[in-house]
Image 1: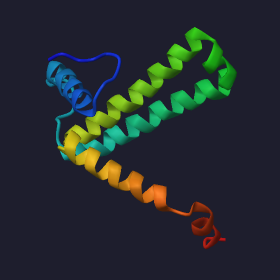
Image 2: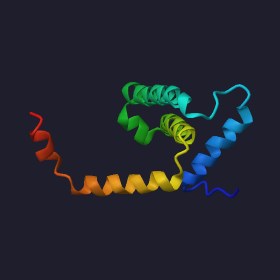
Image 3: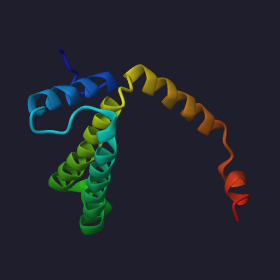
Length: 121
């Protein structure tokens, strides 16, 4: 499988997730829906690690310090890896995800956020 390392596709990320799981299938949780909630917790933990970098190093370091930036991106990659594990566990294809993502994007483009949030005051 050729992977363009300059622009990963969702389908490729799902495949990489599955390949990593295959390598460790004897010691990792099964690729089944009932384990997805555990991976949501792992994803949240990784988001916390990304937040910690922002808190400890600041936005300017992320933008200007190569080492800090690399570490921050690595934590975001961990978030996406767990996200792909979740999609795989629920057998959500890249096509299905893309279709719903675009539909949600189009809905959000037509939303009036100020009006919507005003109703909740």
